[in-house]
Length: 93
Image 1 (cartoon, one colour):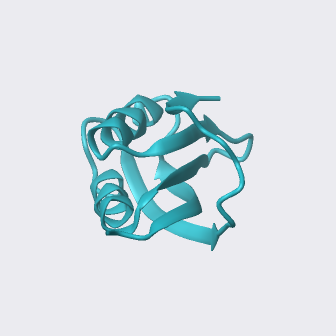
Image 2 (cartoon, one colour):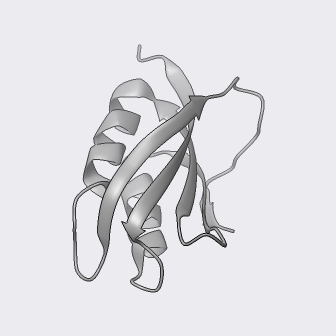
């Protein structure tokens, strides 16, 4: 059984105004992750995701590649957090 992890990540580059959050949401649902994605005032996108380690790693690789108008220059894990927050799905904030 895969360990469940909870990562907070930030995406930089061309990630706002280009449907990047929708792309993150779709990828998260495909990978069966839970959490949130939101635009930050500094032009970055915050991703708070939880799920099995292998699926989370695959998800981050997927959302790190350019697609459509989005051009993430870096999607990095900021920190791993304790599994305390409750999520029922993946949503925009």
